[in-house]
Amino acid sequence: MLNFLKKLFTGKSVDYKELIQNGAQIVDVRTKAEFAGGHIRNSKNIPLQDLRSQMKKLDQKKPVITCCASGMRSASAKSILMENGFEVYNGGGWSSLQNKLNS
Picture 1 (cartoon, rainbow, N blue to C red):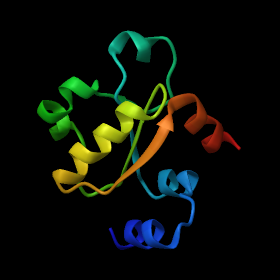
Picture 2: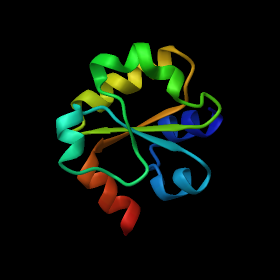
Picture 3: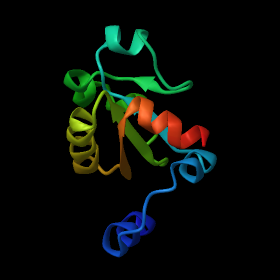
Picture 4: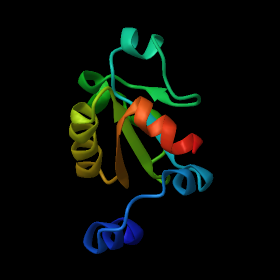
């Protein structure tokens, strides 16, 4: 949580690779059909409309990186998860996040 606040106020970019190496979980909040069309390996698909009822599937002790198609739904998911005590980073669009993780 402290690292999140530091990055928020210092304007530093998020190192998504480092987050993953340290155990962060990726949550893709697109629909099941969108997820089936392509996704980041090892990401969890919890559609945004199901997030409140399915967040128990997530480990609250580990950071969460949210992603979707463009970053809009993942921003909403970030807000929901933060309200429930998660450390969350909005990864934006899943293909962009995948490129950041693979670079």
